[in-house]
Image 1 (cartoon, chains in turn green, brown):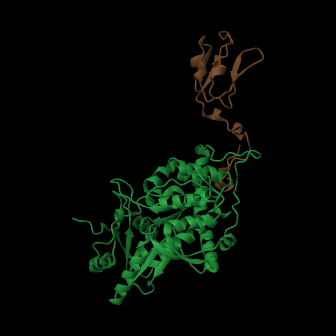
Image 2 (cartoon, helix red, strand yellow):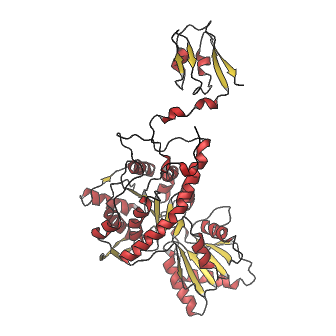
Image 3 (cartoon, one colour):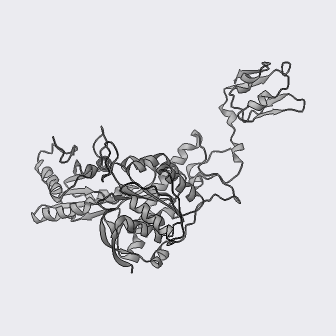
Length: 391
Length: 92
């Protein structure tokens, strides 16, 4: 069994990544990710791990460096947030098209403008279609576990895709939490050495990331889509293996008190734990409320979402970003789209909340339930609202 | 060269045959072809120097011609040829 300890989550993520025996990291510091960069840099400089820490001049360079390193067969890691992720944007689809198993932590933070350093999901949402496996974590333990698990998923011979782990900035990254840190022996048993699908080597020349015209581009995009969809089976297998070894079970969609629930709420990331308290309070009042937590964002778990909502009358989808001028929040769009083909589906409501780090206490979650329960004529169904915004 | 299906593509579209770009015949992009009038050609080699594709070759008799597998028909050779020995002709 691992060690019970307490540590700031960002530093614990760096410790977990070090246990993965990475060959290199290129991390440009940006609030609220900086403690991952700093601690990982310390671990390398102190000789705790045998890895290269490449000090780059921007996130664009960080992603370029890990793409290059991964192509040579190095286990490569980076981390970023907000503007940094946006600066990486043009490289993200390159990493997935080249099928490079890069792992990246995103300390989710609002995107400018106006400048804001606090937590929401407006950084990751515009990266949705970059072809990466995308996972959201709820607490420190999960951030540690997923940091290790992500390498196993990414490097699986049937996957070979980059993975991003979304860790809510400040809400998670800067919390000192108690957790269990796996030992080096345990991680070594779980995570075999990286075997690349191809490497850059002078003795066996290959071209990676070659030019492709219209005669091949569509086939390459189709191959990427299939690879991402097929990765789900491996993700489930790896999570199951982790549960057997470490006793902590992860599913694409977690459910809490949903069995007999009439009205459900869906959250992603750290808000799930607060929402859970709200569910208990509502249940105490005799309201049949339940919670769905969406962990796997890409590949999207269609079957699990459908199964989780099938008996509900109403579903509140919460979003921490807005698709401006569109149908509402990005998660709302996705859930609506997933349920469109179902003959029986709940009425769906959308609240966009917790933007730019605004605090969301339990009473906000109970308030959303109360508002939706009060909508007896279903007038608010299929609409979205900026929760708590001053009129 | 038969086009592969998406299932036949190597993972990450890695090209493992060095020099295989030569199998890609960019000549199919061409809408005009260069035609040399050797009576005007002074064998200066400007067309050979300026061809961005590197497909202009000098023959044993000292005159020049383009490899039509790769000539994209850009017309730079004709533009640079100061004795006006090269004419761009529409492809049929």
